Image (cartoon, rainbow, N blue to C red; front, side, top):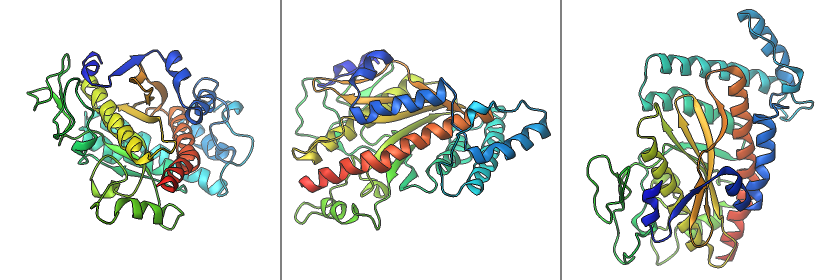
Length: 340
């Protein structure tokens, strides 16, 4: 991501080991349970799912999951019914993903039939919702500044695969931030009928200031729902660097909005971001380190949609992120609003 170095506050990529040390404590604490799922393969499937999985695998001649895959205690109050629903929905997602892969389906088709249902399943029963945000754009005032460019006028920051051409409108193959599609999905906090509803309404509709979106985008569904995780999807590996730049710039703009909203309060210093290419899902973070932003050189694999084992791992990791959003992240947003 060498072209991101020409930002006034550049985005640098670093190794996973270095980046881990720079994560805020609440996000760093997520890595152990994620590694327990992805590396140790321990306890990532509901215990109540054992019978249903066994019956399914026997029917297709598959190999049974080892005992270590299953949690030793109920982790959701719905118990067996929840486990059965998870299994049936994951099998449907797996079938849709296989069909999308074989038919070389478009990115929109993957979003509709695979990624969207996966995120909807993961957020079920939580205070977090997945939104399709393919038409959301970054508001000009939160665009990252180019080195040597004044902040007074709205910019169109434009990046090509190998260089930066902004502040201008980019040519063919460029990533033009202002007015451009940035990411595909956002995981957002549900605030209706919660303690956040009134203070967010007051922050968004401040008298004399016009509408002030809580996020960095004026897209209506994002006006009053704080974004916790952003997701960019691709159906193939083509233009992958462009997608990475887009995702990083989206996160940087959000961090700039949080800094302005903070008014001296502790604000989020990192955003979890997920990049999906076909079946494969990877997690990274964009961190604000003061003098520069930082992201992982390569993301953390968190599962895929091409096998039942990997689907269960993906579901478990997504739910780890969603629990963080519903607890620590929700508390951080509440503290920011209290300071205002």
